[in-house]
Each structure stands twice: as C-alpha cells, then as structure tokens.
Length: 633
Image 1 (tube, rainbow, N blue to C red):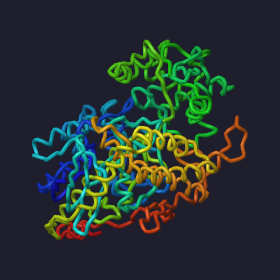
Image 2 (cartoon, rainbow, N blue to C red):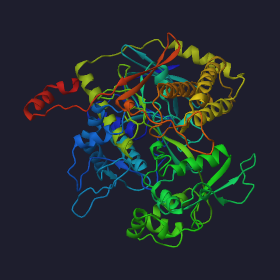
Image 3 (cartoon, rainbow, N blue to C red):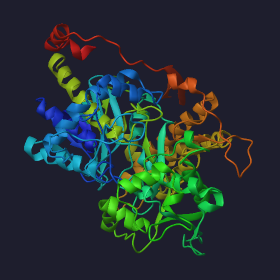
C-alpha cells in the first residue's frame, strides 16, 4: 500500500471542495491534494431544477444586512445562531468570488444583482443562472485548477478515515482494487450529502456521499433527522419544482406489473382526493415555489400534492406521471385563486396547454428534459417523492472544524442548516464554509507549523485486505446489500415516518451493518466494483446512525416538522392524522455520535447557540484582525 502525504487534503470535488482548494491556493497553501472519484461526479455538477437558486444577501432593492439574513436562517428552528451569522456575513464574498470567476449571475442595466423570493425568504435574496447554477459554479472553479496548479487525484474512492494526533489519513481504493493511504495534516471533508442511502432519490446516480466515514471515525453529527424531500422525476433524476408546477400539469397514474410496466391506461387521480377544484389547481401551482415537502402544509396546503403522490406510488404500488400535453379535466384559469391566476397573467402564461405555458415562462426548463432525451411534448414524465437534501450533517464550529481536530467539513456534509432553510441556501453555505475552513487552516499552518512523520497504517491495510478476501465468498452481492439499506431508508427514514415501525428498522439496520462488516459484500473481481463493495460499509453504517437519530427524535416527542410527517399510530387509513410538532424543540439541536467503546449510537438534545449580539467597533476589531486573534474567537 502506497502512502501519499500532503499538508491539506480536500476530499470531494463538488462546489464546496473545489472552492476550498482554490481558496487555499490563493492564501498561499501550495501543498494540497484534491482526492475525488472524479471531477464530473457528485451532486453539484450533476443536478439542478427549473431555475436552480443561489441564496445570498440582497444586493438590490432591499435594506438588507447580515443580521437580518441570519434571522431568516435562525427562524427555521434548530440552527445555531453563530453559524447563521457566519453564513450571512460571508455571503457577499462567496457570491462575488463566483461572479469574478465568470458564473453569469444576472444584473440589471445599472449593475444591480437582481433577486427574487424563494421559500422561507422574506427578502428577494435569491438569484440563479438557470437550471444549472451549481454546474456552472463547478465549471468556473474547475477552470482554476490548471491556472493555480492544483493537484487532483481522480478515480479514488475513500473507504476509511483514521485520525491521528498530527492529522490523519484517508484510505482509498481505485478501480483496480489498489489501496493507498493519503496522509494529511488538515482534512477538508467535502463529500456531499447522504445520496447513496435512499432508494427513491433525486440525488444523481454518480453521487453516493461518504458521511459514514467521519461517523465511523467518531465525528459528532447534528440535525441528521432534518432532511428535505420533494417531487422529482425518476429518469432523469431532477427536481420538478418552480415552473414545472406553476404551469399546472396533469397528474396521472397507472398500476404496473412486476417489471414496472403500466397495465392500465393513465388516469388523473387528484380528483379522487380533492372535492374542490379551485383548491386542487391552486395547490398544484403553489407546489412550484413551495416545492419541498412541508409537514406544516398538511392537511391544509400544497404539500398534500406530495402526500397523494406518495399514496399512489408507495401505498398503492402505482407509477405517477406529470403530463404537460393537455390540461386536467375541468381546468380553467377562472378556477385558480387570485394569486395563481395573477402570476400566470403577469408572466404572459395563459396559453392553452401546460406545455405551451412552460415554453413561454421557462423554455430552458423544457429544453433541459430534451437534453436528457425526454420530450415533454411527446410523453409524460414519471415522478416520485424523493430524498433531495440533508439539512443535518457533521457538527462544526464557526470555522467549520468538526469535533475531530483538524477535520473540517464543508458543503452538504456540514450540518449547519436547521429544520427549514431558505431555498438555495445550501449553495451559499458551501462557498462560505469552504472559505472559512481554508482561512483557519492557513492560520494554523502559520502559527503551529508541523511536519508529520509517516504513521503506521498497517491496521487499516490488514483489515481491508482481509475484508476484500472475505467478500469474494460473501452471502450477498454488494448490489443486494445496497438495495436492502436503500429500500429501508426510503421506507422508514424518508418524508413519511411511523414510530412503531422504526424500532424494527433500526434493529435490522444494525444487523445488516454487522453482517457486512463480518462477511463482506460479494463482487466479481474481474469487474471494477471493489470500491462499490467497500463503500457499502460506511453507507450501511451511516443509514443505521440516521435511523437511530430519527427514532430518538420521534421518541423524544418532537412530532411532525420540516420535511418529516409523523403519522399518528391510531388513525383512519384514508385520513391524515399527524403527530403535531412540539415547537420547544426548535430551541434545541439533536447531536448524534458513535461510541466505539459501547458500540452504540448516542443521541442528545443540546441548546442551540443564539445569534451573537456582539457590538462592532472598527478600531478594536481592526486590531484583532491585524494580530490574528479574530481567528481564535
């Protein structure tokens, strides 16, 4: 096993990881490596929506401030106030850096960076470059790699982290099954969200996530139960938010056979649930800008649309489609409520069909699916209620350092969001967090220089060599094992949750992890799937930890909140009876950690930190900036 040493290792090459590398290079840290499965892999460069949002401080029209923006973050509940202020204060720098790199965010004739309102946003802080905002961010940052001479190691999959007193090492495997230990003094952990945990998911297939690596190494996590779910197309995986819903398409479904092929004609199913067509059509429209499933909008609100799709697909076993080719039976603009009708009229979108309205309001949203080989003018689009984002992740301080010394987390893997977050705030958080981590690492290298000696990582090498050997004759294939835990997460850890069923799911999750650890995951050594098999270890471990945290939250009595609807144990199957939210938990954050001694997952509620009320004074703060003490606060 080769050992490769560097001062700073960036694990992951999404928008956050790339920005960490660029920021470190600009700060003068030259000894760094970006370790990645591939620069074209991951969520940032492979995902979007009808108009993918970037949330920032308002630079047009509003009397905005970092303090006001922090309050918008904080209002979502279960978010630390100091992190809310940090992500607000760093917003403009992160945004303008992307502008300087060439991301074409729009401005008006006076140079003002215009904005619009997104969900949970009291100001017009949102902006976009179209369906591919995060992809354009990645492309702009990737263009800096040759210019700044940044070393990138592609085609490596991380399978274990071993922290040491002077840093640590990431063990990785390549397609050939070769092992390498990447030794670091500082690690920027930017592996994205837990994409590989869910069967029903809008995360790109190329993204699996690796939070399980840090959890197995003992890193504390916060807010793991707080995920975001929403309606998305199944193939391609893409959010059907915004304009896709505002044009009021038809919702149709059909029963399918064992191969998933429809065995009956497509029929509209929403009229089965809605007696009032004005409410039905208006809920569909409103689903566009209220896209994330919100338990607060059940039973009165647009999230009933998500719930009815869930009933058709999960409870009835049907497939659901959006059909843009014709209006729903009985559709009329006069049946829309005033908000929906006026929006479409002002947008000039009063054409005869949903497709024509989509092509008028957002032609890019229509062309996007054509780029994927799906013409909405010719065929319906299959959708489901999918996992989309984890608001929780690793616990970090205001410099994005985790509970493990020298391990920093940035991007979705950092648990800085609360129960609800403004749409697009994840892109801002990734840029701010990665810069903050780079600044702190640069300061540490200046004030506490160290040259780590090569450590002995033979224990990791021995474990994995033996694990791969066991895997050749394991009872189940890596695909079967992955399908099992992904199906379990989608059934018990997604938008609709039932406490009485979760206990058995947690026990089954732990049992599966222990089986994988003991027996391995079978794979064909002639096919490059060693990395896929090995990734099942951290993925299965992570899904167990997530389910443990979800069960603990439910048993604590937190109730339905955010994108999680907790169904009452005693309820009529045809009605929605949810466990109400206990709002007192908004003042707390759920912390989760693996205890290697007890071999148990430990959960505890901690008070959330308030928004700092520190008074600023230029001369005194300037002095702290000059002497570097600002980095220690």
